[in-house]
Image (cartoon, rainbow, N blue to C red; front, side):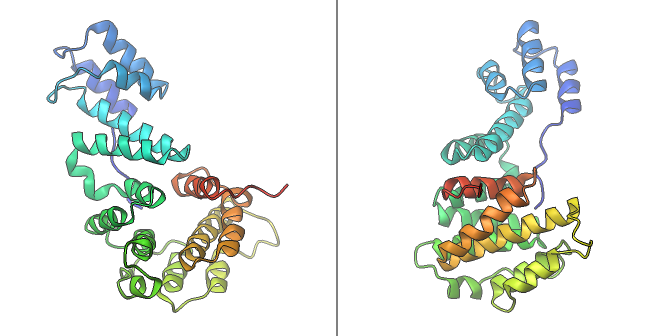
Length: 256
């Protein structure tokens, strides 16, 4: 899914170098820089709590809110992640359509109508993303009055997402594909050797199979697939971590 542009460390340091006429004392500014470099976003937010809306430190504070919100999501602190994402968007409202991360948090917070609306806005800036269509579907199923049949009727059409196994995932949610199609697309013929690329494809495949079965209310199958996505084929990126969050929130543990 399209990533939200946030302040990089290089831009951050450049902003600090230029920010000689701001309201932060030199020592405080130094502390902010050090905290940001250490990814101590609690500290950054504490030190910048008194800045004005037009401060040159605004983007730094907003970036820290975004990054802390992501970390809170990975820690399965869903309400707290939404609070940080809300605060980020209050500071930079033009980023709202890009904010699919808040949509994921809305799903796990059972704020399905808000999630559905968030993914609809994201569709306006990211038109060919199967994942966005799927999360919109998931929220539509669980929103008041929702159902799998109704969600299929309004499934966002996607034609140009070339990532493996996204075409097959979209077909599955549309009701014209199968679980076997998704898994076959994700697997590679490597003589039994699991490559990093195949691990990534299988992580995505099993995550979306788990979510598919959750939408159908088939808990046992959801558990089987999320265990594979979160543990057997674990990946250290946003959606890989989302699989781990899903497992934690649903009480699914690795098999020992």
